[in-house]
Image (tube, rainbow, N blue to C red; front, side, top):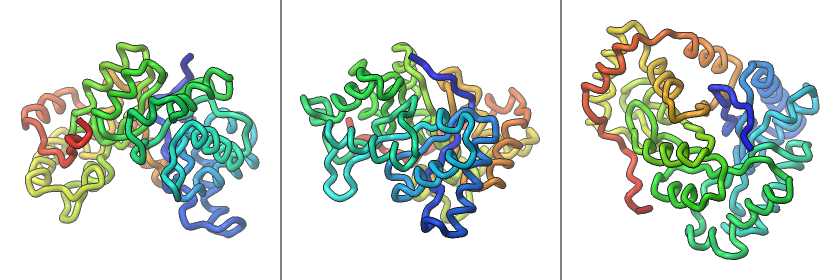
Length: 305
């Protein structure tokens, strides 16, 4: 079963971080969540552990205040136990119940298995493991669609190859700087899976540009990567667009991607995102960037091979 996505899915990993229930800061975060629901983009993407659970709690308040179709437009993720690292079938079920309680809903349409790093793949696939929990939730009708969401491509490929999951979300690995998720997404599409491409800005570098101290994929950008990015930025300027505009449209134009997940932390960021979507990127730019050759990405998934 598929769900009706839009080209963009709005990420909320930082929403509500550091806010206290009933505080003015929480009220501001709730207002942001309502603005995200009102934006016309189909789904908000959250997780059990985002902002220590505050992302879901804030979205839950927004759902209660806004009403309408809000409750049907949330994607969330199950996470390992924050204290013990447990991530078995029972933890999957508990994590989902915790999320539903915070969100104030009976179910979500799409649920991801998120960052299964505290367990091995073999543990996840064993009887009583996390995959069994995800399958159980779908077979019982508690969710419509189950996915797996993480970064390392070799690990993600193993989950895709099970044939259990309906969707895959990978971040920082199909961008102007890193194309390593291409084979994963091709494999997923061949299986009829829904593909989410997250972090098209590389968690910073492709939005802010090659500034000293910039990072890509949560790692410091190397001098070689900063040099490559500066060259790409110069090409973008020659073609009348910004580096960030090109980074977003690189994902939006990909035939492998059903929806691009972009984190949005404020109404101002939402307006900036919508402005970027409306930009017309000259087709000649893509060939010019390709002519630079592969970027020296900071991503290294070799430990998962």
